[in-house]
Image (cartoon, rainbow, N blue to C red; front, side, top):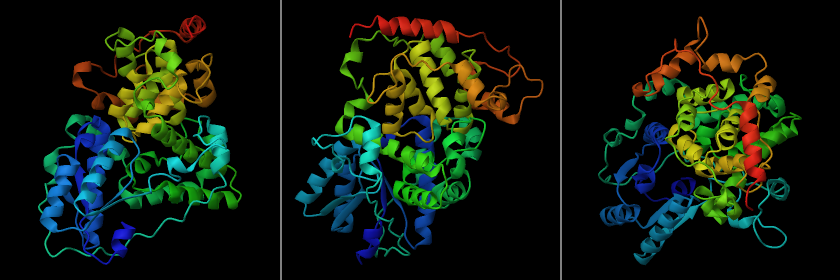
Length: 451
């Protein structure tokens, strides 16, 4: 956008709803629609507009170039396999037409091909990856253009509301909407508030699930409403100011980076066990099983797990510490394939990110790069005692058993499908698998594994 504004030619911002958009889950697709609405308004304030087109990207762009006489098509680079395949095809086709087709960096701090080990390959373990990049210069973010030159005539545009990007959210949209913070201004406000205050205690505060100890920027980062470079430099300034949690937060930004680099170099991370030897592991893949249904409906009988899942249904996000517990319970206590959980999160999270979601699930399951050792089975009981000692988090999200449950806990029943037939007055269930029994079964299966 900065380069286009500097080019001195008319600029036509375009968003294309192609197969990658249609493939999104309910919550991320709804969140995308909200973000596009805000972005269109921001462009209008600069004397521009956002053109909405639907169809295969190559066909849409060919038609737009023909209609407008555009000499250049520029976009921000994406790194997931579907986007890479699409963009490679688009770039080749446009260049054959004599159009300046160019992709720009911006979604990452470092391009995946720019960070290599001394042997010349990519990093497969996080800690040496962090050491390799922590002192690397990250260019300062470029300023947004103050104005974008408009064309003499705008091309035809679909109406965003006609796309119905939020249709699959159904009644859950009204529940989640108050927790969403849309657009660049909101993202910058979140960043400013975090680095001026909570970042100092981030190292420990990020794990206390009932406290607001995190930056909460994941939903904005996922859509580019704020860039990792902006976050990086803010974190560096906080670190220089002596705020002790700043380095830990910078490491979390680099963990996101690590996930993207792995996705780029080994795209099967999104679909298959990263470690080939885990393909023989006898995970349950039947989503119709009683235990899987109980997990999806946040009725496992394990309060920490259920509270975390309910937080996701009400807010569209889930605390990172809680994500590990939820994932561990599904993949280890219930011995279910990590793809069941990964796909469910991809449908329910407004901050869904393909690389981070896949790496997080595979890390917890043990099948991924730099994974948790197979014998690390998070105990959801002791984890709750450590990170929610006053049960404030559990009480915030679980209504059953409380005389006067808070609105947050009651909202869960407004967000879920009516077909689940659940109510706050229901009795809280007994565990489908207890913490101790699940751990024993998981360890026995891992120790008997055939690899």
